[in-house]
Amino acid sequence: MSAPEGERLTVTLPDSVRQRVVEIAADALGKLPPAEIPAPLKPFAKFAPGKRAKAAAIPMAAALESDGAFRARVAERVREAAPDLSESLFSGVVPAAADPHEIAAVAYLLRPHGWTGMVKDALEAVSQGARTAAGEAAEGEMARLSAEVAELREAARQATDALRTAQDEARREGDQLRRKVRQLEADMRRAQAAARSAEAALDAERTAAASAASSTEAELRRLRTRLTAAESALDTARRSARSGRSEGDMRLRLLLDTLAGSVKGLERELALPPTQDRPADSVAASAPDTVAPSDMSMQGRAKDDPALLDQLLALPMVHLVVDGYNVTKSGFPTLSLAEQRVRLVAALAALAARTGAEVTCVFDGAALDGPVRLTQPRGVRVLFSAPGEIADELIRRLVAAEPAGRPVVVVSSDREVAEGVRRSGARPVPASMLLNRMARS
Image (cartoon, rainbow, N blue to C red):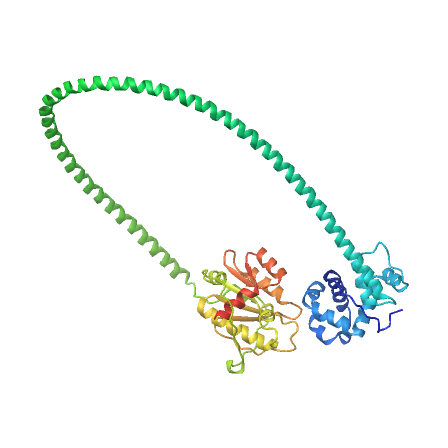
């Protein structure tokens, strides 16, 4: 039996329990008929349960709190999915072995008689578990610090022993140096005596050198003559080397001209026509109908300038792929979807004109009721995912269509999209980087 509507919870659900409540409701939402889904949650009904729980967490929590009928429908799905736990809670018995997070979430949704007390008890168990885990972590940290202290003490002991060993070695080296100094002093005295003897011998040598100077001058004149002849021979050799190099350069130039002529002849023989097509043009998707730019409204916003995106867009032949709604719902979520598309596409057109990059903007077309009228600015390819396909899948197909080695930058803050395109060789960047770049323009 459900509790009366007057029974209210006076404590705030922690994030872990609130997340579990949203996960249960997100799973149940996909099984409800469209007529039983609250209006704020209908845009998320076709999402996968995991993505639905992440994207619709706030409106779903609000609907569970304020919409009793929706909460009752979710409770029915909970009773079908966990009949044993549900019956135990309705009978007033809380299973001791059950996860307190699960008990708190299920009791919050089923709201049996006395549910607030069950939720509070479960939350107390959650807090107690967290405190226990924190205590265990503190004990582990204490043990780790104790081990580190022991290691430091051992290292200090080893360092002290090493210092003593170094001091003993220094004493031995000092004794050796002192012996060497005494030996050097004796050697110096012997050298001084030898220098005095050498001075006497030098005087005798000067006399002999004076007599040899005249013969040396004659030999020097002869060597100068030979040097002049060698320089003349060297100059002749250099001129011969330059002549041989000019002949080699001429032959290399002739070979290059021959290769260039062969390439031009091959181009004429193959007659390959010029093309403006790109691999992204071969990916199947829905394109919007065009409309005059005067029918659109755009607004601007000033933010910081991200240098990394500018560096990526400076790469040759770069292809920028943008997850449209992922960017617009982060940058200007208060606008309508049509205004979001217009504002983003206009900013991308300006970015494409400045950088020369190939730009493709992808929007989710699963929730569209009919054709979209949108201006097609120069330099931006706008695509909508086909019925039954989300924009994430179209982005992956666009990346897979590119040849290996071509730089591809994907703008999306969706973790699944970023990981998928990174495995395919593309470079993912967050939506905030593009928003900052757009704001600077």
